[in-house]
Image (cartoon, rainbow, N blue to C red; front, side):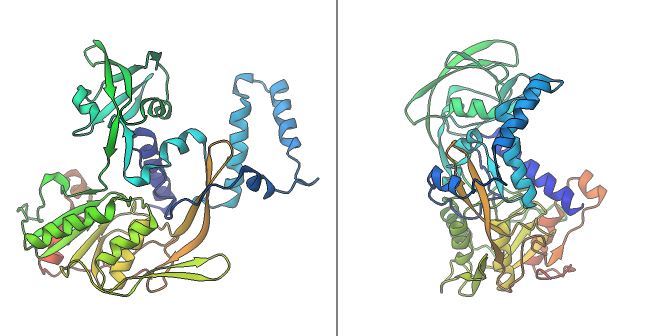
Length: 422
């Protein structure tokens, strides 16, 4: 798969996450640092000089001409064209990690790094003219109310929801804990019902201990009971404690090793990523930030670690940003073996700047360097043991990466595909 194909696919996955979740994990692939405080709108405007060579009146003139002359006037939406012009600025930069976020999407995603939100606790998706329930999360108001997969949202607080986008539905349904929302539902059998649901604080786990298929198995199909497994889906404020809990359980159970699954992990918060890496290291460099002015900042591990169990990290081409920082830190400090495919290669430090319209821009401000000073951006983390799936593997749904990880922790001889970032 070509890098461009992989990048396009990853961005599609991230967009889907932003779009379909009431528990949205927005922009994790693009943000590896916590947002700065919002600047004043005047500061943003002052950054663009108003000179005769940069006259934004021309943009208004162009839009006016389109409104008067364009063959399909229904397509000439002033706000949409302005947004297109803004996006064109970032396209001209040639940096996929610097981008404009419209106010609606930013409002949904801005607090998702906390690992919790206030709402009803359901994932949703677009289907024809309606937004439908994909899943009611366990122990949430949505589940308690009886919402199930396939339920179409036809009204919210009495307002017709026909033709709504997922973003609009999410904004309407989310709200402060303790308040209620009336949601009109059309069930798959055609019956309709209005549910009054009290919103609550919905905690979203970033770490999942359930192996693929529900049971950890080796290549022969045998259940593996002496190796701990957990998957880090993203790095939020809750991740370090959730990882601590998993490792404590592995130590208490006398496990002989740990598999950390980072496949599909698009990144997250820098501090929490570094804290997670620090848990497994007894010293050494975690990451170096190379700034635009040539200066550098480093994050080093502190003495002491929560376990000395051997670790295998499983990654794929959709492992990005924070997941790459963790994999490289443990790999290059000799603490973990990395199994899978080369990771995505998102090694840019980004921060957010809020805008006067309620939107934001994410701006690349630095690059990440691994402990051995390899650049992640555009290259990714190269696995120690590279996995190539055959058509038969895919058809039979064989998780070869997990099988190899089990082999490593059981001490089997496994052929390698290279080490480090090269």
